[in-house]
Image 1 (cartoon, rainbow, N blue to C red):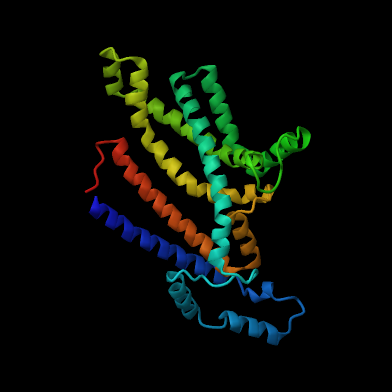
Image 2 (cartoon, helix red, strand yellow):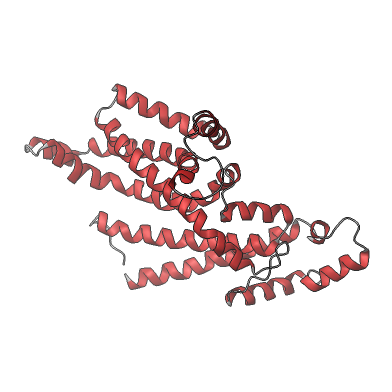
Length: 305
């Protein structure tokens, strides 16, 4: 286990380094931020002074070396737009995005997994057909369209929920449902497919032949083995929901880090974009490591040498 953790830790470091290099190069190849940050009537001297103060007039490798050294100390520089530390701004918006992503993931799990199991058990029944139709709609309907429809129906027409801003539980309902629909459909299809595959296994037929109760066969034998691919998707979806939250946060004016990152890309606010992408990479490798460790508890056949 120790060797496995060390190997994964080294791999995680290289992943984060690769992400940092990639995002740095891509951002600096998009153009000069002075063209966006400075007013249209700025003089050539003012633009040159801005580039010098921000260090954009230095060679690219010098800029990256300075960025990497400061990032290791937790200093990603100040936001070009807000004039505040980029890391502080991202962490300030992170709780709102985390709240939305966790709510969406929990809703997707609570709804999709039981329905996926039921659809597999009652294959080709009306329940199975309804689940497949819902999964098809959930994965094909654009997120922005679903969000607008939910706003028009439940926010404007019925007036049940607020349509913008952050607040109590009622403010969270519509953004959560909008963000959860795609993940819900994906988990539903995966759970159904995984359960169908496991239910055709020889050991389940043997258990039934020995007279084991159907519920015991389902919950103790089938579901335990069908969980592995589902757990993998659930782990990665938590990070994916942060990237998918861009449209949802924009539609509902949700003050999250995804919305901050989109505005930073438009403004060419390099420090904000860099810190958000690197934090997302750190979260991704951490969650993947956690999922790998969960495998051993779910499947005793898995051992980390």
